[in-house]
Image 1 (tube, rainbow, N blue to C red):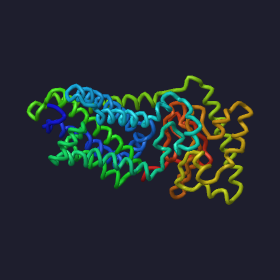
Image 2: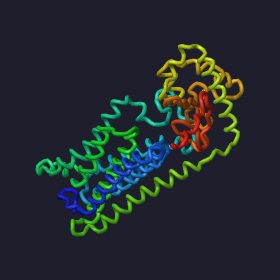
Image 3: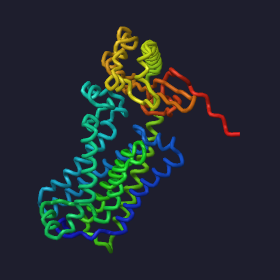
Image 4: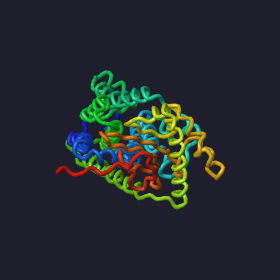
Length: 386
C-alpha cells in the first residue's frame, strides 16, 4: 500500500488507540475526584504525566521518521509532511522536560530566567498565554480532526496524498476530539498537562498505524501486527513515564552543602519578607491562595524589595549574582511562596523543590525533600470527626 492509496487501517488497532487515550482522560477524572492529592502530585514538573507526554512525543518522533523513510522509498517524493511531524514531536518532547534542565540541574540562560514566567529553559512559556492556547487548539483540531475529515473528500484527499500529506486515521478522531473538548472546557487545574499527554499518545498511535501501512500494505483483515504495535507502544510509554517519575523522586544532590546553602538563603528571604511585612500596606502582596515563584512576585506584584535585602546581600558570601537576581535555589530551580487559608487555618511558607528538583509539598505543608521555612504555621493537623 502506498501513500497515494486510500488506506484501510485495522479498525481494532485504532479502537485500542482510542481506548488508551480516552482511558487516560477517564483515569485523570477518577483520580481528581477520589484522590486529589495524588492527582495534584502526578501533574507536577517531572511527574508521571509530564514524563508520559515526553515519551509519547519522543516515540512519535521516531516512528514518524521511520514512516517518512518508508514513504520516500515507495513514492520517491520528499516526505516533508512526515519529516515535519517528526521534528515537531521531537521539539515538543524536549520542551516538555525543558530540554533536560531539571534532569541535569543546569541553570537556564538569563533570557529564560527573565522572560519565561516559569524560569525554565523552554520556549513555549515565553510566548503569550493566549497565543500558546490558540496554537495548541489549532494543532489538536487541525491535525486530529480537520485533516482526516478533509482526506475523506475524494478530490481533496487525492490532492493531499499527491502532496505527500499523511493524516491520522479517521477512526482516531474521537481521541483528538476528546482532547480538544477537554482543553476548551478545562475542568480541572492543570488540565493542560492531561491534554498534552492525550495529544502525545494521539500522535504516537497515528504514526504507528500509518507506519505499519506504509511498511506492509496492511488491510483491515491483516491488522494483528498493527494492534500489537499500538499495544506495545502504549504500554511502553506508560512504563517509561512511571519509571522516570520514580527516578525523579529518588534523585538526590551529590553535594550536601547545597542543603545548608538553601536553608541559609530561605532564612534570609524570610527575614526580607518579615521586614517588609512591618509595613501594613505591604501585606497586599501576600493573599490567601497565593502560589508563585518569588521572582513572579517581583514581576507581577512589585516586590522588588526581595532583590535588595538580606538575600541579595548573600552575594558577598558567595551567592552567584544570577541566582540573587532571579531568586533561584542552589539546584537551579525557583524559590516559591505559598499562602493557604481555610477558616482559622493559615499556612504561609517559602520553599525550594530541594535535591530531587521536584515538588513534594502540598498546599499546606512542606514535605518530602523540599526545603522550606514557615512564616505562618505549620498548620495544626485536622482532628478526626467524633
